[in-house]
Length: 228
Ligand SMILES: Cc1cc2nc3c(=O)[nH]c(=O)nc-3n(C[C@H](O)[C@H](O)[C@H](O)COP(=O)(O)O)c2cc1C
Image (cartoon, rainbow, N blue to C red; front, side, top):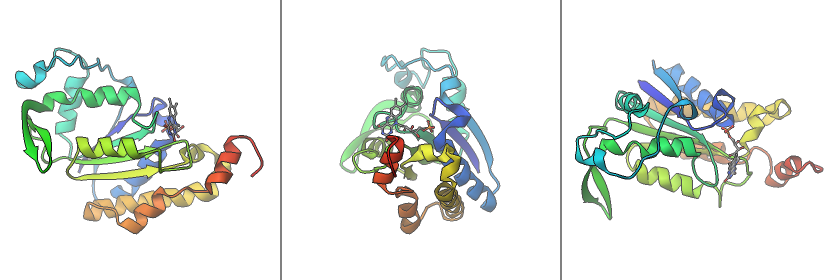
């Protein structure tokens, strides 16, 4: 399987979230042969979409000549896109949002009703693509935190998507937290194995992955420099 990991963390390889993504990929690689490419959004030259819609009217040619031409080609040549990013202001970091906006050339102006909503008809064929979102965050709570990012991902990629969210992610770079982060990474690896074998991750495993690693109050106290 051809996998493109789009890393939205400006911290590049030092990303907390990327620890989760790497564990997931390790699990996948145990089951299937994969060709994995990494792309750091922050290192790519991606101009902002100007909203001119030229690309949607002229067969997908954007007015900008930058790295997005190659990135769109890599996207279309992939089987699975892994969007690996930290939660920033309840959404995705700006460099990744810029990249997402610039996928507009894949769609045409034509809109059609699908179920109870409208969507643009593609002008490139990306029906083969699967989408995985792996998102870490700094707060210990998932409720009132991940909802906007999850909904955006579902609306952008209504088909063949899988979404993994993990709170308390800075702990993945804290050696003292290894007693809870190592088992969590093992769950991510198991999820990768399941995904490679079945294309899904079962509900019980997903629940275990998305739960806080230590109690919310304890995590907050540690971050605040207080007593645990
Ligand atoms: C600008 C900014 C906004 C953030 N917004 C949120 C947020 O809305 N919710 C949250 O739980 N954490 C938030 N965080 C914390 C990050 O998600 C957290 O530090 C995460 O572990 C960073 O992951 P990374 O190492 O993969 O970049 C924010 C961090 C920054 C720098």
